[in-house]
Amino acid sequence: MHTMSLEQNFKKACDEARKFTKRPPEKDILEIYSLFKQATVGDINKAKPSDVEGKTKWEAWNSKKGMSPKTAKEQYIKRVESLSGTYK
Image (cartoon, rainbow, N blue to C red; front, side, top):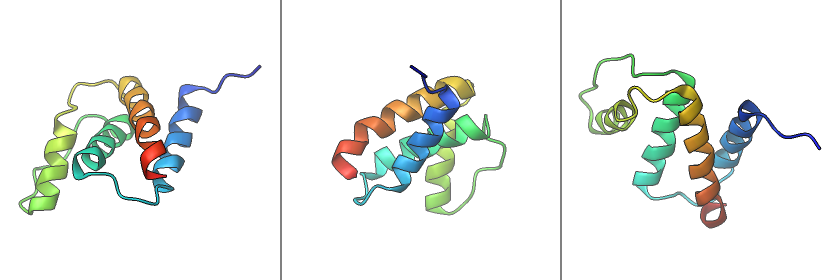
């Protein structure tokens, strides 16, 4: 039996999140956004924006500073799986 790699599971979770038919609460959206950014980009690499939405997203991503991409991917997968049943 073939076990999916972390990369395959991460890609599957990204696809799953895009298929949500209902919008999760803002705190959950920010959580998966910040884990996705940390997993794919690493520590935040841009200045804090001045608009409210940009600032909120920046703060969410910045809260993951120092987390390894591997850990961020694992947490992203778990979070999307936990939301999937409710928002799919």
